[in-house]
Amino acid sequence: MRIRPLVAVALTAAAVSAVGASAYTATLGSTPATAVVAFGQTTITGATLDSDPVFHYNTDHSVIDQITVVVQTDTTASTLSLSRNAGAPVTCSDAHGSFGASNTTYVCTGLTFAVTGMTSIGYILN
Image (cartoon, rainbow, N blue to C red; front, side, top):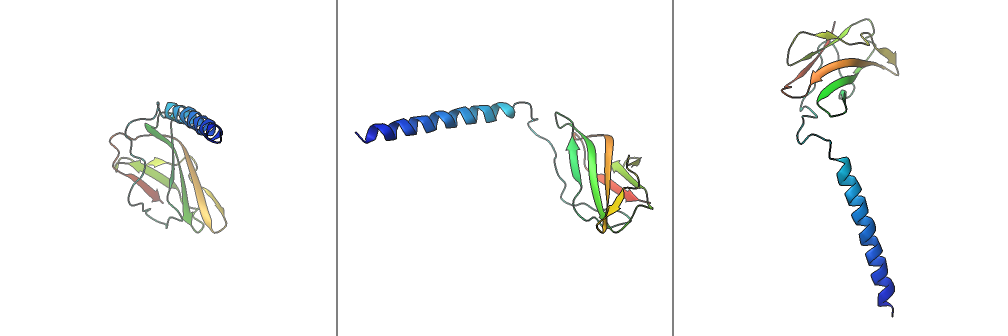
């Protein structure tokens, strides 16, 4: 008699797990099979990074459309530029950033850095 309640609990748990797994799999359907999402080394010319830059992507993760860069000390007198694959630099939309708590944060929006073929992103403070 004690076996029936245990079987019912096990079947219920299996059913809930199957529903959860199915829903989770469905959410992954639109994600590209492969994509570059990080780089092994990050440096910036003219300053010291406080943390690794944070990339934000478009909906299908094929384009980096925003990068948040945090550098040590007050660098608001300088202008931040970015370059993809050592190409021509693009001035960050938040060129001078905002200083607070011993570091400067730049939020560069409106970028169109295609992930496909990307080998590097350069960060330049002038």
